[in-house]
Image 1 (cartoon, rainbow, N blue to C red):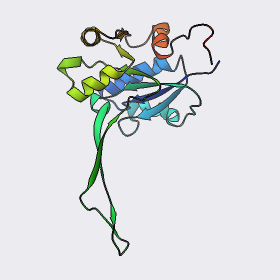
Image 2 (cartoon, rainbow, N blue to C red):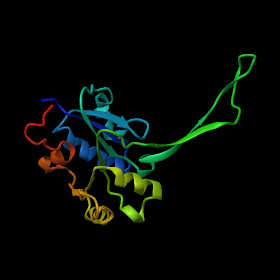
Image 3 (cartoon, rainbow, N blue to C red):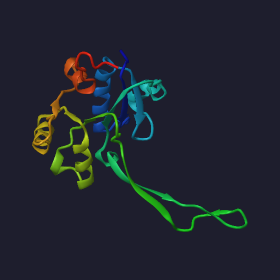
Image 4 (tube, one colour):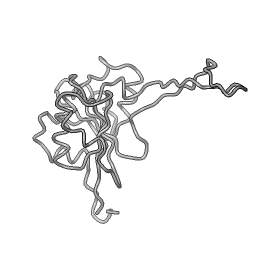
Length: 185
């Protein structure tokens, strides 16, 4: 049986969502190995003691877990294009390559941990991106109710898993669902 890893793309600062992400991390570490990706540009405060997770190995299957500000779920990336002059110098000619980027990862299981209330607090692109995730976990009744309404026609309703995480079986079932017997790789 292969081991499933968690790639955790999280706010790693002292913001509200950073503190929420840290609470979920403490539960996740009890059920699977974690590779951490900072979505806030570095670790600060209580996150500093988890620096080794930024370089932990991640071989094999993984679940993509996202817990950060909704502005990072989906954004437009603009990259200025350089032009080489005959002299060999590089200059910016004013052209820009632009495209939408997302933390959602095609081809793997994607789980969104959030307390954002769908419709009332999110922009159109963030709402659409949030609804793409196979599973959504909230830790508040208000966010859970809002996402439940938003996902009425999806096969999986949102999950309410409060922090600090004490219901490890529920968290495990969302992040690493059991495979039916005989389907193990």
